Image (cartoon, one colour):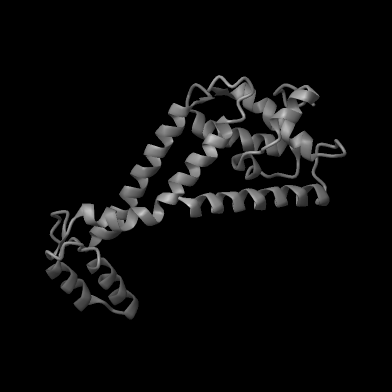
Length: 212
């Protein structure tokens, strides 16, 4: 340890830090120690912000950003049916698209849009589009939020702030706990053990999603 320049972890401290490995670390999989650390640090910097410290405020911000992206994605997808640019889709506009449909798939897509008119007034608003689409896709942002909370939970001193230095030490400890023979590289049996851990983490996520 030490060649990465990220510091070392005492055995007792390392053991306590790797009892429950967050999914974001499990997804930073790499055979070599140096590559695993680089992958994990890149993921951390993506969410920790410019100060390189992950807090609950960062998690809430990324949840808002994720929700905004989902709204933009759904509106962009369906407002292409809005031919006059008034941000609503009228029955006449859907009829125009239906007449222009060149395939059964295109026809089904028009009928799917028509079903979003919840109040049957002949006008599909942006609110109706989002009401129809967001519940199906919100689990993406929920999943990311849960994963970031898992990450924050490994904060060694439990002060609500996971610094880049603290995270680097935990990352080293995690890899070293997998690397049974200490050669800084995961052999096939060690890699399989990590894959099993990743599958178990996915099962927990699915279970949590079903309970919501």
